Image (cartoon, rainbow, N blue to C red; front, side):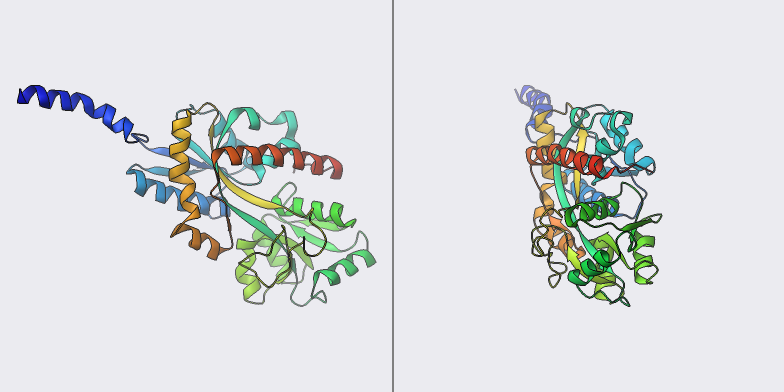
Length: 320
């Protein structure tokens, strides 16, 4: 009788494991479509470390940089829909459909499952510390006095800070001279050195330089002030609610991942960003917390694709 009881218990173990959340049972790949060190990579590594601790399985971050994030995103979109390949994405997920159209080797809305939005990074309008513009009103006056001449640094066509610059031109009726650099750090350095008087940056990338007096913060995108820069007005306060550019860092998987695995991945890779200890850590870095459901992130992706298609078409933005 004892042998029969033990045999029955051993046969039941796989079913118990599944009932208690047996996923993941092996290593999960987390693809970042950029080189190490940026906001997307930092977000991926923080969340992957938590997921590994919580699940007892490895969540291995894999950097696949280059190609405007397309190769890395394609690797996720074309993987098996079993939950063992994920991607951590930023604004390019929703802007690339408008920038590249039919040239994209995947359909973002059809080939991707949303797992959840983790955090967002609003953008800050920066001025050189040695410049004369001490407020957004000063910037506007300078831009309108010299249409088409005022230089504005960005990190390359189609990047988040470039599109924020484009959005500002459309929202405020300005013409700026947009100057591209090979990344956000060189663009910020150019503004700090007064090589170019203005530019946009994600808040986490510029927060330390603003606090150290190396850059001057004039306005932040969105409806509310950022807790990371509480003395800096929002564009909505300044009468430009259209200025809502932000990089949303979210987790995706291939389309067709079963709903129960989506829910498990959201619990491991997304929801913890809304609570201690991860939430306060991310806020201190300058991120806004989201920790959304899969459904809310899917809706956001659809809305943002539509919005940026319109901005890109109206402004005639071309990818590099």
